[in-house]
Amino acid sequence: MPHDAIQGPYKAGKDASFRGKILYRYCRKPVFPPSTWDGTPAQRSAKRPKAGLKLEFCYGYAGSQNTAKNLFWTADNKIVYYLAALGIVYDPVTHSQVFYEVRVPWPGMLSASG
Image (cartoon, rainbow, N blue to C red; front, side, top):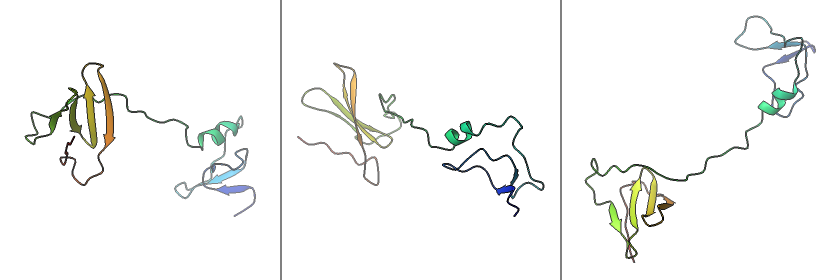
């Protein structure tokens, strides 16, 4: 491979200001970056985003399709049930939920005590 060509796309953490041939295995001929190429955005785009998701509220309940005993009331009038792979404790007074990840092989296995 000549030193005026690189193999494959730009890599995260590497210099993205290269202006020569770029060889891709799926292209028959080499490609070139645009003449106005600025490699700074490519370096930023190659990094993982610092974004994430936060669970705020779960809507829905599959009670009409699920005939298992999966809905419980606690002594302080909170409602406990599961939805997908989450155990949910719902407080109707404050309209808030607390979530617990279900780490059992089958989400239908919910038990309450106390």
